[in-house]
Length: 107
Image 1 (tube, rainbow, N blue to C red):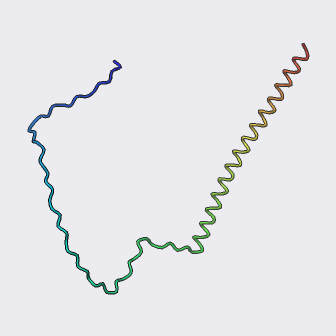
Image 2 (image 1 turned 120 degrees about the vertical axis):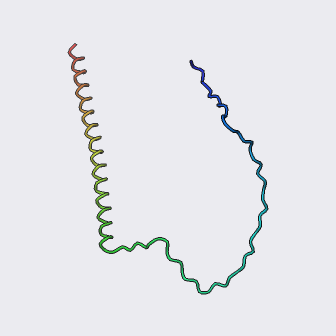
């Protein structure tokens, strides 16, 4: 039950051909001729250039400001949640300690 089952290779069916022998071929190098190049035109840029207009710059600044404000609000709210949780745990610990001490003094 816990032994792995190793799959067996099925026997080939149909016509089986032996592998063919590959013989290397000779490499012939082409003769390179130099051509005088006349004033070649400058290559066109592969990517279009991005131009910032005052409107797009203002939109980028506004978007960045919005992201910073949202992230800051989330982080401040998380910090506030942790602070409130810690304060409430401290108050609970003080109440429990005072109840335990008051019960010990009565006995």
